Image 1: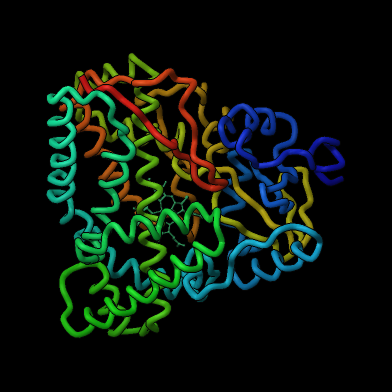
Image 2: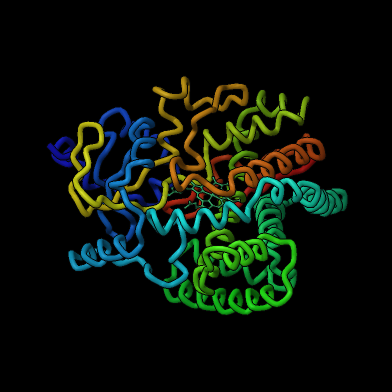
Length: 413
Ligand code: HEM
């Protein structure tokens, strides 16, 4: 029996704005009644949604759920003929490891792991402390000048990771604003033509930068990637561009939401906020619970079935698109007791906020470090931070995969 036969309303669930504003209520219902079921994306695409922890974790290591972007594109094209809109796949910028299966994935991942070393990440710590301090200094000046309205996302959570990732990759300062715009356009995906133009502009610029780095390498990650690829398995210019694109986008939009969702969880939970204020070294625990409680990635990226796959009680046929709901898995009470309670002292081990299996987030140590520094310094400098709008006015940005607020207006003191 298929899930849609089990539930007559299954086909009516659309991953639209209403769903995305508060997915946790619907996810809880699905985990209970219909944990693996067909839903429809906002563009009309039918996909299978996996919502329980055990099944989500298993799906992320199941090789029959493939990520090869050419395969996904052909499934999308077929679905398009059936009347749904197509997504903008297949550009060379999409040829990165998150869109690949072994052995292509293995080859590219090995190169990035060789360049993205723990030493390189750890070496960034003083710079991240400094950048965070500078951003908060700027907010403090505005605060003491009596300017009360501060959007913490715009003025803190966004600029921090973009500066860090650009420094890590060695993107010169005068081009960073361009990267922010390109990355936003590409992630929102609202306007396919704008996305294409942003991808093209970014590729052209990166190819130029790679050439310059080949001639005079530095000590940054991009130089490390070029070196690793030149030593062994040489990457083509396009492969390098796709890799840098992935690192930029994956490393930027997500960390913004870790900070935003983390701060909001604290503002919503006075006792938990008080614990952090009393001891800001607790920030690492807060980050881990924020990842579980309201992680930046709601749904893992698209997969499709290369053969029929049984998930729990449900048979998913071959050639179907599948989304693994990380946010739902992380609120499954089979894994995390009282999952809707934000508790920085709980055991968070095994949460799926960074994915699982071969595509497990390469940037997790960096993201954890940024989140920890951001929340610690914020608690030290602005212990009296409070929301500056009624709670019900906060809205999440429209994005199927990501979960993050549009704005986070706060009063600092
Ligand atoms: C993959 C989450 C920050 C680079 C992933 C995946 C998730 C994730 C869920 C797997 C997606 C899937 O299987 O479909 C996050 C979160 C972050 C974060 C929640 C911040 C809190 C970063 C940073 C970087 C990064 C800072 C790099 C600078 C990557 C890359 C992959 C990835 C390269 C692809 C790995 C592969 O395909 O083998 N991330 N990420 N991420 N992430 Fe992150």
